[in-house]
Each structure stands twice: as C-alpha cells, then as structure tokens.
Image (tube, rainbow, N blue to C red; front, top):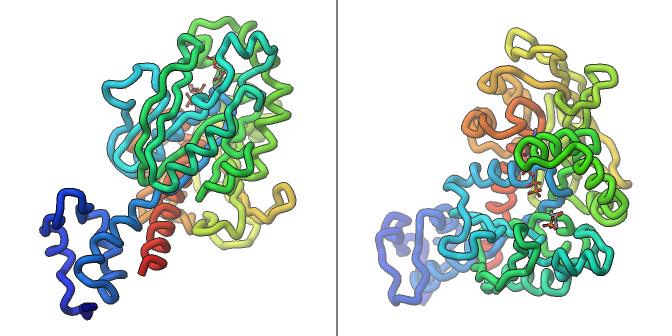
Amino acid sequence: MPLCAGTLPSTKQMLSTRPQSINAPAFSKAHSSFYQVLRASCTRGNARTLIVQATDRTVMIGLAADSGCGKSTFMRRMIGVFGGSPHAPEGGNPESNTLLSDMATVICLDDYHCLDRTGRKEKGVTALDPKAQDFELMYEQAKAIKEGKSIDKPIYNHVSGLLDPAETIKPPKIMVLEGLHPFYDERVRDLYDFKIYLDISDEVKFAWKIQRDMKERGHSLESIKASIEARRPDFEAYIDPQKKHADVIIQVLPTQLIPDEKEGKVLRVRFIQKEGVNFFKPTFLFDEGSTISWIPCGRKLTCSFPGIKFFYGPDTYYGEEVSILEMDGQFDKIEELIYVESHLSNTSAKFYGEITQQMLKNSQFPGSTNGTGLFQTIVGLKIREVYEAVVETTVKSAV
Ligand SMILES: Nc1ncnc2c1ncn2[C@@H]1O[C@H](COP(=O)(O)OP(=O)(O)OP(=O)(O)O)[C@@H](O)[C@H]1O
Ligand SMILES: O=C(CO)[C@H](O)[C@H](O)COP(=O)(O)O
C-alpha cells in the first residue's frame, strides 16, 4: 500500500536503518539529497532501492588529447574536486594505467591498442592510427560500464610494449575514458555525458615534452623533435579532428603579451564552451553574451612581467555557437585569484571561493598560476555539476 510523504521515515532514520537483506543496497549520505524527491511518492520498501539504483548510474566523461598534453595533471585536479586520493588498482598489475578514487575511475584508452609495439612496427603504423586501436572492444566495454556491468579490460604495458592480461573494472559513479581516440568512433562518442578536448599548440607541446622527456626521462632534444615530427601526420589526420565533437576545449597557445614568444613559458589559454549542451552552462565574465576585455587591477591581482589579460565573448567553433573565456599571462599569488573568481559567473562552484580553494590545494601541480590550472579546475566543477544533474534526472524519471 503506498504511503504518504509524512509516513515515510526521515533521512536520518533511512541512514541508520540496515538493508533488509545482505544483497539489498545500502542507503548512504550520498543518497540523502535525492531522498526528498522520492519521499512523496514511494513506499518504504522501494524508496531505498530506487534511490540507490538511480544514483548508481555511471556518468561517462571523455577526455581527448595527444600524449604529454596534461591529461594526468587534469585528472588529478578533477579527482580533487570529488575528494579522496587517486590510486592504482591494489594488488594488480603494477603497470596498470587505471586510476581509482572514491567517485571516479579513469581508464586510459591505450589499453585498447590492438597492435602492440612490435605489431605497430611491423605494420608501419603509429599508436595514433585507428588501425592500432580496437574500437569494437572499446565500444562493447564502455557500453557495459554504462549499463552497470563489470568488464575485463586489457592492459597496455608501456614498459614492455606488450598487451598484458586483463584487469577487472567495476562500474564507478563517474567513468572517465582518457586518451588519443575517445571521440573517434561514433558509437563510443554517443555514450558520453560530457566531452573534453585538451588542445595544446605545437610550441607548447614541444616545451612540455622537453621538460618531461629530457629532464625526467633522459631523452635527447633531437629524439624529442623527431618523435613529434613522426607523429604529426597521424595527429593531424586522426586526433586533432576529434575536437569538433567536444563540449569544451581548453586551448593552450603561446602568449600574445610578449611579441614572438614561442618558448611556452607564458601561456594564453582559451576555454571554448559550446552552447546548448545538456546540463552545462558556460562560465562567463561580468555579463553573459557581451564581449569583454579585462586587465585586472594590479593592486588586487599581483602579476609580474608580462602581466595578465582576460577576454570573454561569443564566437563560433566548427560552425557551432560557443562562448570563449580567455586568460593570457600569469599571476603571482594563487590566493589573489579570489578577485578574478568574484567576477566570474556560472562557475558551478558550490560556494564563493571554491575555485581559489581548489587551486590552492593543488598549488604544486603545473599550470597553477595560469589559465590551464584555472580552466581545468572549472571543468572539474562542471563535471561534478553534470554528474549531479544526470543523477537527479535519473531519480526523477525513476519516480
Ligand atoms: N598546465 C601545465 N603547465 C605547464 N606544464 C604542464 C602543464 N600540464 C602538463 N605539463 C607538463 O607536461 C608534462 C606532461 O603532463 P601529463 O603527464 O599530465 O600529460 P599526459 O597527457 O598525461 O601525458 P601521457 O599521455 O604521455 O602520460 C608534465 O610532465 C608537465 O611537465
Ligand atoms: O601515444 C601514446 C600514449 O598516449 C603512446 O605513444 C602509445 O600508447 C604507444 O606506446 P609506446 O610509446 O609504449 O609504444
């Protein structure tokens, strides 16, 4: 017999009640906010089950970029928004590329290479070539995860260059597929709730690669140049075109504040945001839809040479309406970012100062004093908002 809202237990009672059987799902704090939605229309028995099932729907996020373009750094920022520390699967293959955290699991699409290093060499293809990628398996497994099923996913071992035995991945609340081809196959593309592309210009990519591969991995300047050149044709043919499918693009270019600066030390970062994307409201500066150029007051935002400049305005990108928020230059003190934050709207922050708080928490990550860190942090908040909106919609349709 249906119960009226007043007769259903309170959220506090729900939290303290044990499930009626071992297999019944537990009601946790994470479900509380959705309980109100159901309280008016559910019987005691099915309320718990419906809420838990609805909030257990996996939200799919795609992150595309070339290798060495800051995907790992971005993932660490995103996971920081949800809390909990990222870790590799325990007790498994030490060369696993998977990252687990309380809310999110990040899968690296290199695991869907169907040709190992020798195979690619024999066939004369690079890892960027779709021929080296098993899209059939990628689609089947991404779909299974979205349907709440566990998968046994292969592991591409970056040390040996071989495909290792599979690891089991359980469906998380948020699944991120990151790598070279997340939006290449139309079937996989249609599974995402939100799509991100990190678009790093050649000059900056080169500077970052030198920093990592020369200083940290002992590669020579010549070999880094040669590897970038060898990848370029396939990058242009197969990776770069995927950016037109993304909902947001973080484009990283050399600064325009210093003439002919090509070293990639000072960056101009553009946050390209599509209009009309489900559950996503573009962030704006001062006044939505206006075109604004802003040089913040130097007393409120300390910046050494060459200073800092913001831009915001509407534009088109591959024929679609977008709004662009741009930051050229860098600031000196992260805590002063609160001044910039106070002029931004639709940031998806839960409280005033959350962006600055996140930036301070991750101050040791590269890009913490420029637009890469700022926009990656905002995208992390956007992912949280998309997640919450998808879950709420699922709960409502369950009701
Ligand atoms: N925002 C940034 N500002 C400056 N340098 C950065 C930034 N993001 C990344 N880097 C540099 O680029 C290098 C690669 O970054 P990261 O490991 O995050 O990229 P990746 O895309 O995950 O690489 P891969 O796919 O090869 O594992 C880092 O070592 C760092 O030096
Ligand atoms: O682009 C890459 C990763 O994003 C790698 O180059 C690709 O996975 C091939 O691996 P390896 O360098 O081990 O041969």
